[in-house]
Amino acid sequence: MSSSTSDSKLNVVVTGGAGYVGSVCAARLLESGHQVTVVDDLSTGHRDAVPSGATFVEGDVAEVADSLLADGYDGVLHFAGKSLVGESMQVPDKYWHGNVVTTLRLLDAMRRHRTPRLVFSSTAATYGEPATIPITEAAATNPTNTYGATKLAVDHLISSYATAHGLAAVSLRYFNVAGAYGQFGERHTSETHLIPIVLQVAAGQRDQVQIFGGDYPTPDGTAIRDYIHVVDLADAHEAALLRATAGQHRIYNLGNGTGFSVKQVIETCRAVTGHEIPAVVASRRAGDPAVLVSSSERAQAELGWTPRLADLANIVSDAWKFTQEHTAR
Ligand code: UDP
Image (cartoon, rainbow, N blue to C red; front, side, top):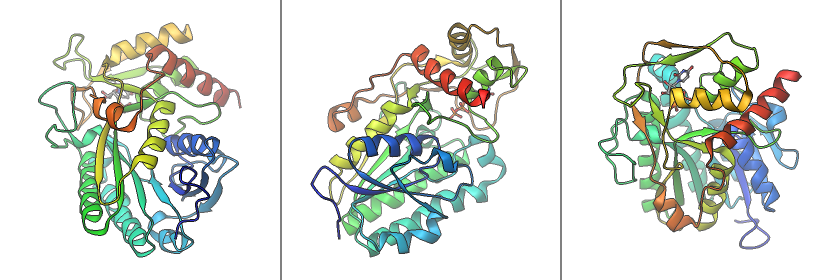
């Protein structure tokens, strides 16, 4: 049973809402007037990242979903999961359990309690090494790493549940998320993502950044990615939640459609921070494709969403403010 007060104000569960993207999305949903319950086991998230207006349930999604969803919700935004390419190659069981098994349990609980809507955090890593750039949703899905393989498996799970059980589902395939939203930003205990690492060098927390691979078939030899502001990404989730259609599983790529090389990102960070940021070229990281750039035309056409904070310097600047605040503590 739905407990929403009107059609556009929903009562939702945000799994992984103590993490980076989940916390920003939970904060934006609350600002739009939705009711939010965050579920997070705090394995990688932070209790103080849960927005103050949200109800917080500490626990593993696979274990708490059934009892929680019995209370009646309009939807689930499922961010909880494992998301590191390198780790997924070394510890695959953590990814198959944490992404696939957990989501299966969640889907079974949603089916049992007739939770009507799902928005899932998928990834560009489902595509693997693309044949053409920019990558559309029609591109072949051949993940080059276990992380992408597990997220693709979940997309297949969701499709079959949507078709068979009437779930209204949307998978959002993120390209590289960066930036921050006030107090909500990226702070992993052992950071692996490029922009936070580069900014930690600028903040004096690391000596240098390693560039993983200087021999890619790209203009400067370093890998190219499409960086999207976390606020733009979060706003696409609300649009997806509201536009999801019963019995359908829609998939949308979310990026800005522009690629920046690792070297260009480091240069932008130097310009924004005014710090030198020493960088050295190291070997490639296993599982990394050379170029990932999104076409987000489908999301823009069907979700009525447009990225508004696309400028890389602006994305880095918001991340830098967040890094400085967290360094100062
Ligand atoms: N990267 C790098 N040095 C680092 C971290 C990342 O050169 O310390 C590269 C990485 O190999 C990839 C790009 O930066 O080409 C973005 O990596 P990130 O881990 O931020 O995101 P991913 O693309 O893996 O989702």
